[in-house]
Amino acid sequence: MIKINTRDFGELEVSEEQIYEFPVGVFAFEEVRKFALISPLGDNIYPMWLQCIDELTPCFIVFDPTLIDMHYQTYLSDNEMETLKLNHDSKKRHLVIAKVPSNFRETTVNMKSPIIINEDEKIGMQVILPQDYQFRLPIYSGNETEEGAS
Image (cartoon, rainbow, N blue to C red; front, side):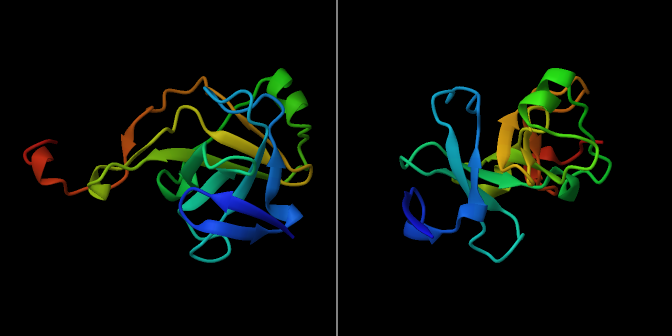
């Protein structure tokens, strides 16, 4: 176990199994290479937090994209597969970053640029998918401002 300072939860102890290496960082934070995946609501319960282990920021709130779109799929290039050390038998996790404004009902997720994690090797990478997914997909429906929309 190691202690880390977090943006939203103060000091926490995390296990080595929660820490992932990002060889090329995350978009706009290329210099940050180690993150902990924190699940404060319980094991594998979303949302989760992807917290830099060396600083308070960056810290991202993340979701499993298949909870939002059960048909969500990713296609990775050979280079991305190589960076992640993925093969067809690798256990991988997909995460999408949420933007959570003060009115949480206006939360959106970036389905176009997910984070792919090789659970076996503890390596992560953010990618841009060739598929036509949204950068800011609203995750809550029934917003009164959308009344009358089809």
